[in-house]
Each structure stands twice: as C-alpha cells, then as structure tokens.
Length: 191
Image (cartoon, rainbow, N blue to C red):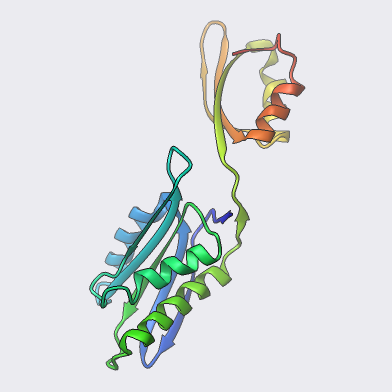
C-alpha cells in the first residue's frame, strides 16, 4: 500500500468541461473540501472518494457523486484509489461544466482520467502503520534520547517536563520503534 503526505493536483479538459483533481492525505480531506468550495463557487460538482484504515486496520471506503448521475463519478474515482493501492488518502475532483453533456460513459472516463492525472503528479510513499509509545527520561539523558530519536525516525508528539525528567509521547513504525528501544539502555528509559 502507498499513501501521500501533501496535496497534489492536476487538471484535464474534456469537451470544454474542466476537471480539477486533488489528491491529499485523509487528514486534510474535510478542510480541503471547504476550501475548494469557497475557492470555486462557480463549479457545479465536487466529487470525492477516499480510502482509509480504521482503528481495527480495516479499510473504509467512500465515494460521492455530488449531483452527477449515480455511479458515474465517485466510483471511478474510488477505483483509481483502489487500483493504485492508496490508503489514508482522498481525491476531490472539482468540475466546471463546459456546456456539452458527456453521457454516463464519458463521465466515468473523465473522472477516472482526472483522478489518474492527480495520482501521476503525486509523490507516492510506502504506507507504514505508526505506533505510539510513551516513556520517562531523566534530565541527564534527554539529549542522548532526542539524538537517537532523530536518527531512528521517531516522531515526538509531545514532551512534558516534571520534577523527574521529561515524559515523551512518540510515534514511529514498529520496526523503527523496536530498534530505538534496543539502542537505549533500559535504565535510561522508564516506561
């Protein structure tokens, strides 16, 4: 599976209709939909689809036609996400109607082509499930721990200081987290 960490877009034109497709991380989907609706008030359709993993590692999928004939826009967009094995990603396609009806087959092809154009413009990354962990670190060892975290792709979500030291809340891929804990002496970190 692959994913994206930022927004990528591309535009296609078919019979004077413009299709502006935006591929984005799932975390940006709702906010980006609002922005696109504000930015493109004259657009007639905002078709979307997404694929994400829920807390049970099950794939959740959604597609919406936003007024286009049922199954002619959201499903082809979702099919592109599925075909590229994208996860935790969404595509929103903004359509400006050009005056010529495309018909059901034409809409399916147009929305799939727009979604594929956005995916082609993207830098896809391998998907890795991230795990969270917390640990307490004495003040004297904070610089060593932070150095090892930077070397081992451990993301610091929060760092809270108290009288004993620093409480770190971190996340990383399973393999990176295991390697990090192996590197550090168990007396340095108190979980």
